[in-house]
Image 1 (cartoon, rainbow, N blue to C red):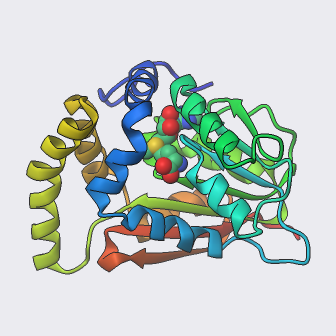
Image 2 (cartoon, rainbow, N blue to C red):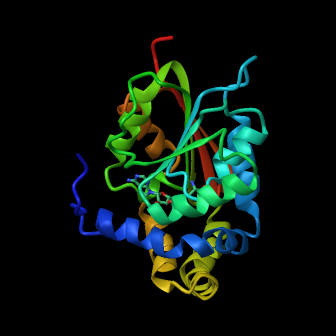
Image 3 (cartoon, rainbow, N blue to C red):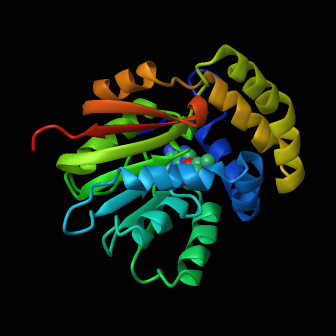
Length: 245
Ligand SMILES: C[S@@+](CC[C@H](N)C(=O)[O-])C[C@H]1O[C@@H](n2cnc3c(N)ncnc32)[C@H](O)[C@@H]1O
């Protein structure tokens, strides 16, 4: 069971959930503004890495938030009817459910309130598991990665999208300037919740990326782990397979 408090002194699990409940209604528009719509293109790249067989995969999208990944995957034919989005924030799920209904997908896709570190699904229940900009917010990353591996069928694929740091020193400096000084103010202005966007830049700067994150996935049980930097490394797409097919 994930502890309610962060052992390294960061925000607690309850604090993170409350923060997302609070920003839920402004979440999509703030994302589009802060990333200049790159977030939409990044999620499209994510869905292109989902299994592409004769039948769409049974997909679990963790930390689904306002359901952008779930909707994009379904539209791309990469999420079978009955695919599931899970999140621990009731506010984000409410915003997501409205979007599913507007898209006419309320009957095809299911939402559940669940913590990524303790899922109620049976072993090997899904063909693919995704998490976009979510794993960084989970306090016990190890437990969430192990749960992702457990609920995948052998040979099933995890695709993880997360912020990272550009490799080029000049770009990194410009990015950090934007991230530390512009983004918290702009995010605060658009969403009306400045604290959430201060947390965003702090959490991104301290989260492992590239090889270090691949090692975390391998330690959790994934095989064939890959990392693909996007937009000069501002974000990275990771994939891994549950061994044993
Ligand atoms: C930055 S949002 C990402 C939402 C969505 N995946 C997207 O691409 O826009 C992070 C989401 O992670 C959820 N989250 C954070 N920790 C979680 C946990 N332990 N279990 C389930 N959801 C969690 C939050 O409630 C929030 O909806």
